Structure formats: C-alpha cells, structure tokens
Length: 221
Image (tube, rainbow, N blue to C red; front, side, top):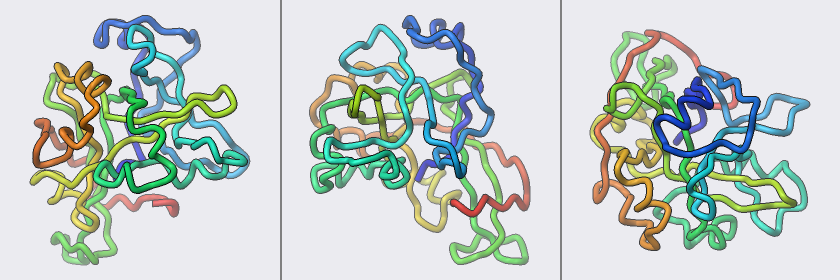
C-alpha cells in the first residue's frame, strides 16, 4: 500500500522536473506526509497533474471522494485504489479514466521483522524504508485517479502487486504504489487500458534506503 510519501520539493522543482506551471503559490512540502488525518483536521493536500490540464500542477486532496459521498470522512478509505479492482469498486468506477500524476520525492514502507531482526510477515518489529525512482533522486510521479467533489479535486494513489524489491520490504501485504517511469507520464494520463500499468506487466526501477532499524509506524498504519 502507500500511505506515507516524501513530498519535500518546491514549486520550482515541479516546474523544472515535470515541465508544468503551478496554479498555487504556497507550497511547503513535508519529508514524511501521511494520508491519514490527525483528529480535528480535514484537508491533506498534495500536488497532482490531471489529464484534463496536463500543463499545470494543481493541489489535490488525498483520498478520492466519489459522487455519492455525503461528507469527507470517506477519504480515509480511499487513500489507495487497487489497480486490479478499479472496475469492481463503486468508489472508483467513474474515475477509471480520470487519471492524474501524484508528485512525490519518494514513499515509505515498513518491513516486518521478528525479535531477532529477521524478516517475518507476522513480526511485530517494523523497519522503515524510503523508496524512490532510480532517476537521481529527483521528484517523480505515482499513478493516480481523481474525482472533483463539491469543487474539490480528490485523488487516490493506485497500487499494484509488489515487484521483487517491494515484496521483500512490504512483506506482510506485498503491495506497492504504481511508480511511473519518467517517460510514461503521458501514457498513464491518456491510456484507457489501466491494467497495462499493473505489475508484472509494468515495472519501474526503484532504489531502497534503509532509514531506521527499528522504527514503529503510528497507530494508523
């Protein structure tokens, strides 16, 4: 899955690496941005690029709200969209061809270990890793889908079966976000066959950083 991302980049970097303009002025990214809302908060903004306006980055709100949502509490359930099941879920059916690029510097996952420090899907010890595209550690895009709800652009990050690297890291659920190679941004935005981007048919070369040997995620994870 993908609930934590590195979003520490600037508007200048968005323009430089994605060759787009930005329609927002104030952006202070976070090194570890969680899609979960702390109590008392509502918005969880993150820059995205949509298929409707591919020349401009806009602020999206993490957690897709389908048309039938009565309020924003539903967003906790739609941070991720399983790409293999998009056409099966009422939340995502109308957004299959509403594609977006979710702009990140990396994403985070925890490997489960036993008390001896060995990989164990049932282990209680969690080892934090940061993962990013093999592109010189520049900002890159995750595949997303979106919907406009009450004039708010909301989105989900698409996930797929883990590749070999991520299956070793996310060894409990063995899922990963759909990471897009730099040259495939337009293809994701305009290709109606979304399963072309599911692993193992599609894959991106990733770099893994072991950040902390025994880092326990918060209670939301």
